[in-house]
Every structure is written in structure tokens, then in C-alpha cells.
Length: 429
Image 1 (cartoon, rainbow, N blue to C red):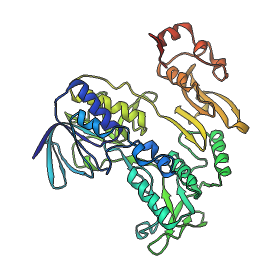
Image 2 (cartoon, rainbow, N blue to C red; image 1 turned 90 degrees about the vertical axis):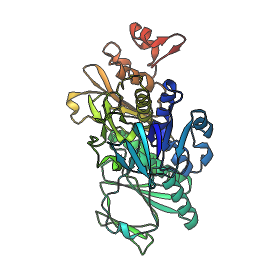
Image 3 (cartoon, helix red, strand yellow; image 1 turned 180 degrees about the horizontal axis):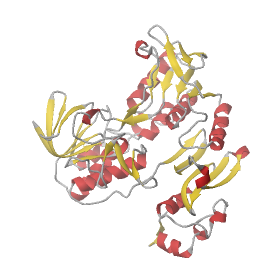
Image 4 (spheres, rainbow, N blue to C red; image 1 turned 45 degrees about the vertical axis):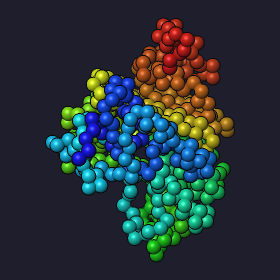
């Protein structure tokens, strides 16, 4: 039986940041990584660019083979951990076992598959879009069958980035979204409409307040049927309604979970020596003051680093972060963070500035003179300042009227807060 001091299940950004943190503290302890992926590592946010042919496979990696050699890390690719024995501190995989002292579970998320009639019967033409493997299969299918049209189910971030990649491949896309707007979780109706208009100019169709209830075809997909009974002929369907934490490994163990694996400020689970980070973890939400699953790259990176330090014996607490998405969609730079769609707007103050003709939109959400969230479309250069104001819980009453100004920047901030931000030669925001 193989033994290791540190076992990391998952080799994406949380796992890699865990490795780096461990090696800052412990240079010699054995580290083993188990990964279901077929390649060493890659930046998941880049899969849409790979789909669109904008970036080659070899450019997707953010740590090369030398990284693993230098850090003396053994990586088991194409390997699924299928059982976790808490009492014996063992993980089972491929009819083998590995014993660990400290474990990080960074299994990420898996695509949500909604109930669709006949889905299991169709063997060709239906894909998800969450990792490199699914993206490569999608590319191969498009090229082999010379696909010119596709249906994407879900107009959230995954669905829109997939749509962008398909458009780059000259594939005409019909988006089907259950909500009454695209990017329903992070954007309001006005911001969503700007992006929808941009999609229309690219030749994309958007069907809202509807969903797919049935697929048809003999082995290969030929059409999808919507709840409204509308039929869409297509040879390609991408299901992109979202992801959920991959909890398969821990469901028959004492490890506590709700939506994700519950962790404390050290990213440790309720079981000693077992940690979780990334899209599978339910960690501290800075704004909501509760534990939440926030499946975004920067949070996975931070959580992985915190877990690694604590696994190696250096006590570090996770300060908590909040949801943030920074991405270019249909050639429009966008950033959204924090609370952007408050359920009861009467309890909040909302500032808006817009120029739809030029794809510009800015929305600031405040309560008690403190910023809780924002949406930026078009001009996003100063968004980092707003992130700092949220994190530091700054009272903005003295400069609130300047928040929407094009001139708003560092020099408009109160002098005392500017001093707090200035460190040495740089500025932290």
C-alpha cells in the first residue's frame, strides 16, 4: 500500500495552490495528487477560448511539469478516487489504496443535468461544457459532423461562454433559458438586455422563460422539444444549466455537507485532518455572513492556499470572500460582484448610470452607506477600487455622489483610507 503525508484529490487551481502553500512550510513531506483529468492542469476559464480556436491546448496549462518535479509531487492522472475510509485514513482508487496523514478534497463541481425525456437514449450530439475532456469531445463532434447550428440550454456564464466559442466556429446558436433574462444570477434586466442585444447582432437567438423537456432522434440527436411545445431541429445540444459540488466521494462518510462540504475558517471539515477547498467546499461568504458554495476561480485558489498552510501546520484563517465574475462576453468587458439583485430593493440604495448605445452600464448597490455589490459593463477599469470598498466596509457617504463619475478614482477616496491602501511603492485595492 502506498503512503503519503499529504493527499490532494483534484488537480485544478485549489489543489495547486494547496501544493504551493504546503511547500512554503514543509519542503520534504510526501505529496500525492489524484486527478480524473487526462492532462496535468489547465485553466478552466480558458475552455471557451479553446473551443473557439483562440488558444491551443498547450497554452491552457498554468503550471508545467517542472512545477511538479521541483515540488516533488506525484500526480496520478486519469484516476478516480472512488472510496474514502475515514477510520483507516485511506483512499481507494483503481483497485489500489493510498494511506494519508492529511487530505484535501478538491473534487470541484459536476454539471447539473435537468430531467429531460429520452436523454439517456440519445448517444450522439448531447454534451456538457465544464472541463477540458467535455470540450475536446464537443470539438471533435463539431468537426466530424460539420455542425452549423446548435442549441445551448442555459444562459448563465457557462452557457454564454460556450456560445461565444461556438460562434467563433461559425456555428449558429439558439440559447434556451428558463429565467426571464440571461445571466439571471448576477445581472439585472438592463445589464442582461445589453448583452442579449449584442448576442443578437452575432446571429444568436435567445428563447427565455422556456426549457427543454424532451429530445428526439435515433441514436443521434435530431431535435429538442421545449416546454412551450416549440420544436427546434438540431444535431447538437449543450447542457449548460450550471454545476453542483461533486460530493460522490464523501456521501458514505461522517464528513458533514449541505450544498457543499462544510468547512471552518481553516478549511477543515468536521473530521480531523481532512480539508476541502474550491467548488466542492461550503466556505465563509464575506457579505452574507454564512457559509456558501461560491464556484469561482479566485475563491478556489484562496481556499486551496489556506487549506495547504493549515495542513502543513501553519495556522491561517480564511477571511471569507464574495461572489465575483470578471469576464468578457460578446466583446463586452464585464464585472459583477456581491449583491447585484437584492430581493427587496426597498431595503437598499441603488445608483445607476447607463449608455446602452455604447454598451455601458454601471450599477452600485448600497445599504447604510456601504457598498454591497456592483455591475460594470463596458468600462471596468476602476472596479478594483469598489472591491476594496466592499472588503473594508467603508462608509462612502462623503463621496457617494462621485461613485458613478467617470473621474472617480483613488484620489477621490478619503485621505485616511488612501493612507491605509498605500504600502511602500504600491497601492492595494
